[in-house]
Image 1 (cartoon, rainbow, N blue to C red):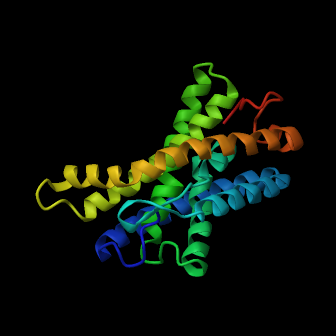
Image 2: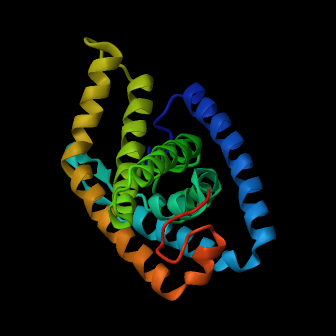
Image 3: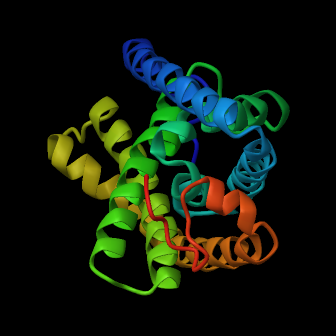
Length: 226
């Protein structure tokens, strides 16, 4: 659920845009550093971007006439870390806003923040914690991708609740309402996205072990260094 064009108040749109611009700048430096050290990672970076574009473009009807969709950012988060996802999400969301009328230019900053900053940060934290706890690699990938998706939608609900507090119950009531609206479709989507991300990750592990090794993953697919 990208927030649609013109939906947020101008001050909110500007604030989220400024926050996202900082994150995109930091992410670009992170990507440039990785690609400069290992130019062969460009292909894997392109795969992560394409995965994000395709999944996040799949809009499914939700309640009250809105829509839900996967995010696709979990894969890139696991492979390149959360910093890289802000510029990747910015590219994806800009193309979708211009070509697919999905999201909008005035709400681009808010959508980048939820899908390219908040979601990946949560997913990356989950990935690190689950790996440290000794869970199987496949389960860590699934959990990271699924919770990246849910965190993105929770952040969007938070953004909407801040902009449009409930007349009677204020911010808390609005947040509960927005979370509830999307939970029906988003929880099954998050589970599906986790499984699909695991499938793609296993495919990369099988056919591109060299690139994974360059990113710090061992032969088992477990990341040895971040």
